[in-house]
Length: 455
Image (cartoon, rainbow, N blue to C red; front, side, top):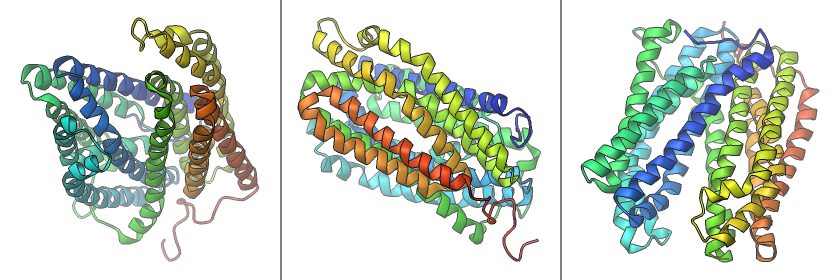
């Protein structure tokens, strides 16, 4: 059994062991997403790639919203686990599973019927409209499976197990690739085949999570009468989950807005930005995993009321993030040309130069998200989710404004400066709040302390 209490033992060792599987899992997912696009492009054509590319932002907004719900609930689960309050932990899991499942079903029906109208709203070209709508409808029909996988993965992480979700993610990814080839290349199902492959792989991974918990984790098995929806717990869960869901959604919408500042710069800049955005993902995703590890660490120790351990964990997380930046800074700066050659066809020298300009600046700016993600993990673990929402809105808002202000005169280099300015504002804001929060004692409504009237 891989469950792990983070309320005792070596802090650096625990953060490393917990975050490494998430880093590997996220990098693996980025890689198989690229393979997914290659399969559609190779066996269907450029219109199919454009249809999937148009559908993906809409799909991701919904999926990130669902992921945010699960992330918010997992903070409470980690608190209860850290407080060794297993009764309330099981009640929280039960409540979130039932309420979230009903919400996912309602979202599935709503999004299924809104898929085509939304595509029309964003002026999707007629030649790819049917394919994009068909892709989205299949994905939205399987939202319940998306929820179940995200829910159980976050539940396992809340009790210190990040390795099992990694294994299921790898299996799901390999299955998705195999089904992509079978449905798209073999059965000629087009983009709908790619969507069916995604839904089936998520359903299998969710089922594996359920079976694993039932067989290997006795403390999370539900007996007769234990699977209930606790209205009082649902209220607190919603207060946590809606903030993280809104945060995840707003960040992605903000990134789409930045794309709007790039588009007027021309095809070369658009191509360069799409290439370097993939580099951004590979550079920043591990930092986000360190922040997620710190969320679980902080929440468990918040439940156990281990104040000093929480602050030592934050310091260790910041050092890990800084160390990761130190490892990637030189390769990104000096290897910018080689990286861009992976995405730029022969003869695309202008695109190559623009991408190198962006990466030469971002190599240094990547230090900032290493710190912001660490601080975000601390605040989420403390239950200060409005703080994480406000700081994210501050960052993305400043980034969008600066992108539109700087891009006309500085081009894609101005987009890089906009990222740096937004992250700097976020670091200063979060750091000031952390210094103020550090002087406060743990809140009495910590999960480790039962509410009034409960024994």
